[in-house]
Amino acid sequence: MNIHFIQHVPFESLGALENWVHKPGNKVTSTRLYEDTKLPFVELFDVLIVLGGPMSVHDEDRYRFLVAEKVLIKRALEKGKKVIGICLGAQLIAEVMGGHVSLNTEQEIGWFPVNLSEAALNHPCFQGLNTSIDAFHWHGEFFSIPEHCTPIGNSDACPTQGFIWKNQALALQFHLEITAQGIDGLIRNCPEDLNDGTHVQDSTQLLRPDLIEKTNSLLVKIVDRFIAL
Image (cartoon, rainbow, N blue to C red; front, side, top):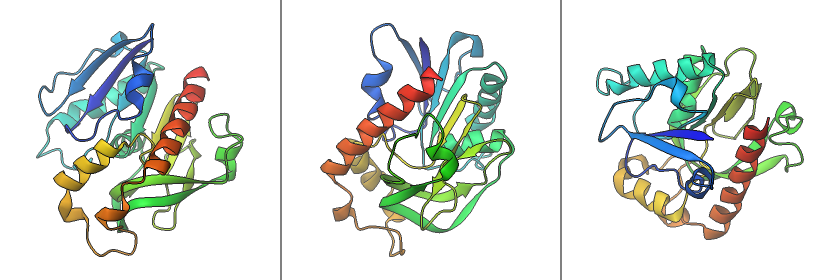
């Protein structure tokens, strides 16, 4: 399987997906947009993974690579490729598919439950899971669910937390891939986000090894199911 991943900033990496993508038999390529904005031809990969980042999908004037990145995502979907998006990556998929990305009423940063929708619980990717899953969040925007997509669920702070489309697009607003290193990187690089919001936890509450291990395992299970569809 040929996998290409797009990384926007050094501190938001594959995390728990690192070992998954580098399994024997996979060919892995990447675009690290903070170093090189050259994107691959869509014919060169089977799976596209779009990671998170502190920028907005609307910041095209400041981050010109977003324009070409959206084109690549659109072409990948049109060509029947599997596309996985996390946080910013999910928002990019949503916008490309006709959803609207806008400011949430509040920031959501820390460990908060995602309540899975009935449709998600009946989908092969989430079937058999608990109705609520603990997840790590770090975002201030959210997206509307594009047409013909299965909504994954919501949280107390955010009405939409992801969607699945035609067994081909998997968009997750939350971070099941997060590691201790990833949390430390967010704290160091985005300290201005840690305000006194209702759904913003203190930096001392964010490092939860028990939840990190649990959510990492859950992500691998979900992605394995998604790829098998």
